[in-house]
Image 1: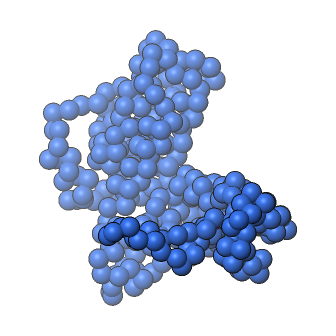
Image 2: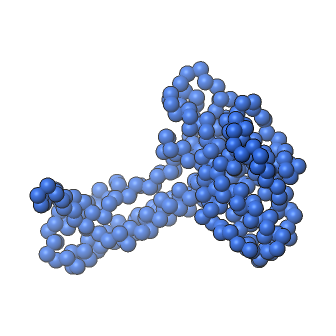
Image 3: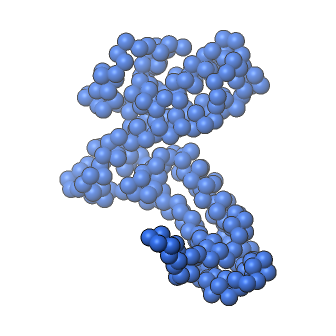
Length: 299
């Protein structure tokens, strides 16, 4: 894509593109043998190590992904994350220990690897030959087991034709991730704990960090801040009127469509206006005009 300025894709100026990956290996490999039963063909695999032996290594993948998701949003076409610049230092600080632990666990795993293979042979003495033939060498494992964390800046010319759609509608991806987090971390009820408050604060922080993408996202944090300012801080349990207000906000924050398109309507209802540039004929404005025009959310 040529002759594109970053004003068309503000994420390029305001975010780093982060690649986080953990390279592991399967605990089984094909023996190269096949069995046939009529038209059914089965390929034979040999398990040479228990998956439990690899648990410490595999945990690094979910830990790193969770940190990247909390700090940024997923760019599937790039197999990467877009992380706002103000979040990068904190992400590096949190990813660092994950990388360190992975490398320490890798060294420990490689030292114990021969004993893992021996244990599998002792458990399956009649398949010892197949296990030894299929198990990778220690040298190969040292090459295969890797953890990668890199950040880079994209230029407009790095965005190929067709990929720009992901940037144009990135606010929808952010909204979806926020809604998923809220739904997984909370439940409707007559009372709420301080953990629920932390979920709302987390959602507000993420929405604010991507507020440059749309006025709807920009207004989420002021709305949540105003809500939380009206309830008693530090309580272990919130019920009554406080629970009603919290539940209403949770219901809104569990709906990615509302987060993406109707955040400004919450702000207007609560006399809140975020200081973000407005665009005419933006995607979120056109969608609001077409959906649920009579609905009003008031806290």
